[in-house]
Image (cartoon, rainbow, N blue to C red):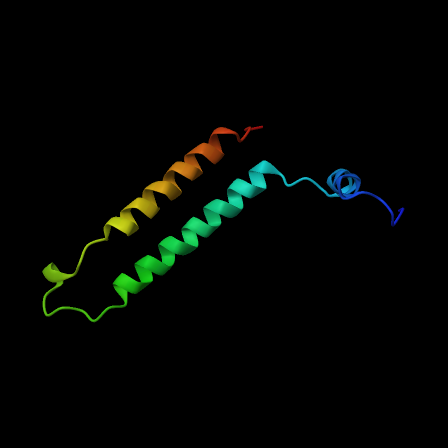
Length: 85
């Protein structure tokens, strides 16, 4: 490699030699992150001190519901692209 290369040329060289991220793997990574967020949110709610009666146990928060919906949607979208042999 020539050390006197212009930054634009270095960028092009780097762009060509760097491996491209698999879009499916990126979606899987994003979904895994959402699942981790959902798990943390649920753990926080379910590890709180229990009320005197189970009828007073708090239900899922709006954040928890939205995370669960996003996870479900992402998994649906990912499975649409799966081929069954």
